[in-house]
Image (cartoon, rainbow, N blue to C red; front, side, top):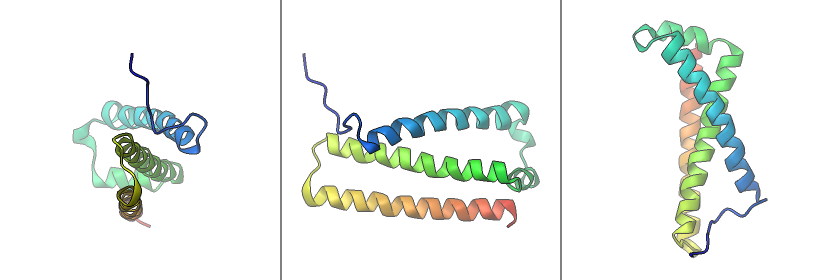
Length: 120
């Protein structure tokens, strides 16, 4: 039988954060689907409704936390997939810093959008 290999080492901080963000994302996704697909149906979602929700500090904070954790979770998973495929050396560093830059841009644009939606 083949030996299991993963770039995630148990007890490693990235390993722990990947699991922690997964749990948070499951909870926030459940909240999102309940609120925006069952309580309010897609046809009822308007900019004014979004503005009203985003104006509430708790909702705004939850959505920004959702953005940051989803970005980390996805980018960390992609990075580890590259490592599992044998990426090393200079290419590994290039991929790492490209993903970091993409994450910073994604989070910055997401926060800008959230601020605009909140009317701040």
